Length: 198
Image (cartoon, rainbow, N blue to C red; front, side, top):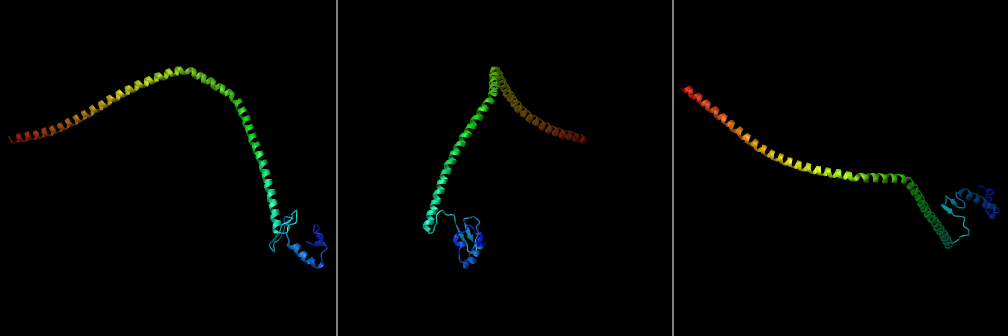
């Protein structure tokens, strides 16, 4: 940029020796001011940090300046943490208030249901003695049915055992009949042969 356009430049720039003007123009063209008051010279890899409230020259001054900035940042962080904590507690209180209001509304809506359930419970309690006697009768009938079932099961087991014995006897008898039939057949053959010889 031309020196005439550098209106915010110090007076020394405008009143410089004419021999320095080309250098200042070259410096102005190679300098980037992306985030004023910071500047950078990409060709040289130089970054200039501006905007200091007080001029800083040496390492001690820079360290002291950075220490002040750190202290200020920590103070700001602590202040913000206090504010955040205050807001957090207020949010918790508001949530609690909302829950109380919701619970109160819910309780009002549930009163008729609770009354209906209490009435239904009272009706059920009135019927309960009759149901108890029915349950006792059913329990006695179930016991009698179990006794009858056990007795019938015992009889069935006895009959099954007797049937098994009877089957074995029948099989033995059939075996003897088969043997006798074969012997009878052999006798008939022998008799037939004897008659043929006579």
